[in-house]
Length: 291
Length: 156
Image 1: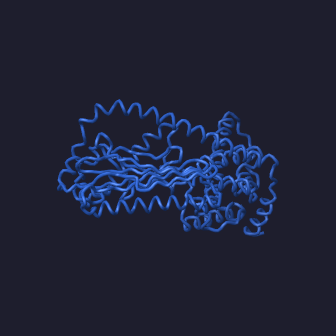
Image 2: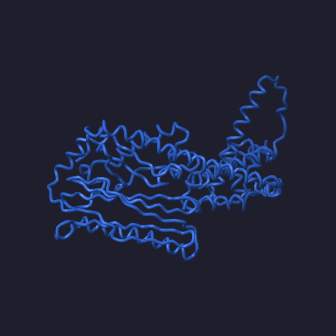
Image 3: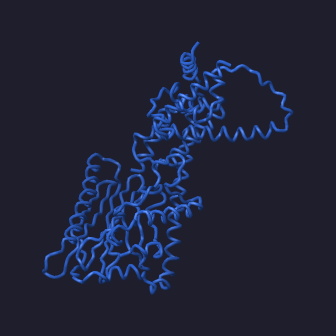
């Protein structure tokens, strides 16, 4: 008998492997254990975040005077035109129907004089509206179908507002069976009136993507020594989903110490229980390539 | 999104549990181990369901988890049994005749996976490539090499 025929015969045998009664039950046990563990992990996360914020608050006093020099200087080189600025809730969308609830505050940036808003302000306002419209539409669609949305909550914060820079953070939390949080940052260079993206911080041709990515990967590996922390990196099961590199226009903002912080969405580089991971980039990592 | 993916994975696990069991059994050759593999795989799949980006990848992804889990288990068993047998005097019959089943068992785990997926699960080469995370050409040459090894062993 040749090999192919023998293999066919074995295939028969394979198909006849008896499935024990306990099998389905064992699958279910595996599923249940994983679900329990996920729940436990998300509870732990909440506690940890709280602890971290207490520590951070006490550190601010020490760090504040050492504001990141290079970033500050980079901002100084741009001429002053600033005319923003106030953020108003342009539109508020509130719904409550059965168990479904939405509260969306749509912010818009106002420029104070009667002067026309800059291109950057217009662009940010338009983007914000498009983004919130999309979230509301998907919520409404789901409500009609009696779908899985339970709540939608969109809020905003001005995280930086100084002479040079204006940064607005928009947080959208879509709660289905569990919540998904998406954060967007909009930055306006107050001096040029233009939207500021990550690339605008760096010298032309500087390979900021690789430099920042390398730092973040190192940091992820360091953090992963703690077993509770997981990032999509060096994974054996699904290496093709590993974090490759930051996007050219990756979300970012400056924290209170003036350091650059790179922000990811939930699920972008880590499982959901890790929340929206953020990485503070130390000044020495990028000082050579900053504008 | 996250919840949806978890549900999709769960549905797949429950719908096709027999497939995963057979695959596990083809590595373990005993019910107890095959059940352990299947349970462990279901656990891993749900735990990491967040990392799947598209529903159409679920199938290949679960296959991969089952195979990795099976191979890991066998490796640890092998270690255990080596430790036990080392103290033995080693009077074992080394002259059994090979049939195809044993020949397949003697393949490297990677080669064996390709044979099992191709001939028993009847998957296409590109599906196998997605599971083993290799490109199609690598899978092709792996399969070719594995078949050659099997032929040689069977002829002896």
